[in-house]
Amino acid sequence: MKKPFWGRLRPIAVYSLLAALLYFALRNAPLTEIWAALRRLQGWQLIVLLGLNIVIYSFITLRWWLIIRAEKQGVRFLPLLVARVTAFGVSYFTPGPQVGGEPVQVLYLQRNYGLTYVRAASTVVMDKLLEFLAGFVLLGFGLTAVFQAGIFSANASGSLAALSGLVLLMLFPPIHIVLMFRGIYPVSAILRKFSNNKFVRFVAASERMAGTFCRRHPASLVSAIFASLLATMGMVVEFFFITRFLGIDLTFWQTLSAWTAGWLSFLLPLPGGLGALEASQVFALGAFGVSAVSAIGVTLLIRARDLLIGGVGLLIAGQFNRAIFPSHLEPRRRGDTEENQ
Image 1: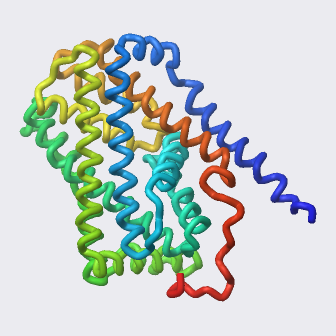
Image 2 (image 1 turned 120 degrees about the vertical axis):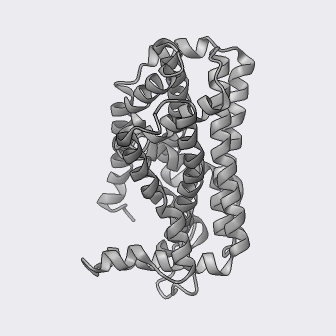
């Protein structure tokens, strides 16, 4: 049988989209400067940074794996790690605050393990909530570090107001988890005040399943939170090594506050925090007497890391059907209900 028109057109559309994302992200990336920054490091230093990133992404994947495995046995870790790197690649090159790769995670579970879209989406919802929960915990220490390091004055009302608003925003993940644990679903309730279309019902079902996971598997929830905290702390350790390898000597509070500034820059609606990351490090490290050239050197290494991992993720996404979405797997039967899945 001949393939339908969309079946022939889909690979072209996928590759065109990925090429466009890569082009718009790289056209303003200082590739020459990045290469010069990498050449300043010794081979063993590059190996250390590469090893740290493998550990970090292993913990990130472990968080998601623990959530899935609580209700679906037989999920393999290494292919899940590949899918997670692919999701990062799509998110990194997509305009927005580090989102966009979540559909990749959902499709991977649906096609490889027969989960329905709703059930797969519920694992991604929990994964994201725990990611931001760990970020909130480190953000609390980071904001303390910001004041301890003297970047902002505790008496500056404008700074306090801005940081207080950020804290309130980051309180949402832990509050959301507690509410779901108690059988309260705030996102669904808010959306249903405006509409009850198919998308809203999909979100409501995913939120209910995430709440069910919280109540049925508290041990897995705690383990996933712990894995998420380890992943976030690994990012801080990596930032410490980057600054040390570039000859920048910072105290603990200075390191944490500079990392916090960089982490917040990725929340801006820009692909990979383009421009915002550089500005955050020049500002934060400049407050500690670090030259703008050295601060930019830090951002260049961070860019090199993210472009490498994101590029690998896009390459895997380009092999959409063969790499992480094998075509030989049977699709879900029409008669299967959500409970059976």
